[in-house]
Length: 329
Ligand SMILES: [Zn+2]
Image (cartoon, rainbow, N blue to C red; front, side):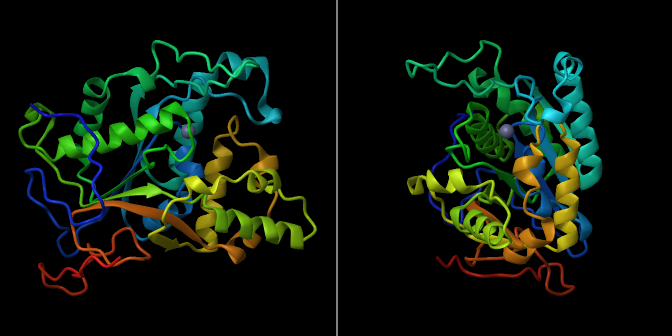
């Protein structure tokens, strides 16, 4: 019987649950899977590094756990009764366009957005809707992702940390489901009808919204005489939630432009006053990397690193000639 519990061990080289570790062979296409909560998360987190990896030939698969049905319309330019009445379909269309821009394969997990319940005047948070993703037991929400992991066989998987990156119930649940599914996918005893067991080799958390980066972009905006969209955010920053950055992926300006186009595809979700106030080339000048936290690895890793596939790439032509390194922290 497979237990659906997210493992909480430190970053040491993990022992496989049962599936054999299958390293990429020389010349084999590398595979990356991003597991996100809502359509638009793939464009607001790690999208420039996605563009970079796609450009270098990596196969990237994006999974959206929910359809974003309970999202608000955050862009006044498209806030019309027609769009609101049709929001689920509008968001599907936006996601299809973003996937095309990013050059990724996209899959829906098929669960319903939980919404982001806000406390009322008395400070009480309303209960989550009965049908929502955050309340679906892992025994139900993990298997469709197990199936996708076994079909796609990603070498590297990304998701959010155990706090969700921000406290949206779907983001926290996305973490639980991704970690549980990655573990179950590697267990040959679990649901063989969902495909042959597959062991992901590295799992990362998105860590792009960290203080140093947001502050650097804020300072650049102020220096250019623009009004920074981040002033209030920085003032109220709670450093107790800061995470360790282990991995900074360098991105070119053109990858930032792809990210911007993907964001714009999600017209209902992207407030231009927040995302596009600081010109893209200025953002790239002051901060050209995207950050991640290595959460689990089944191969030796040397930290800090600059590549999600560090330790998995062939340095020569011999099929066993994979970079090797000890875990150094
Ligand atoms: Zn989201």
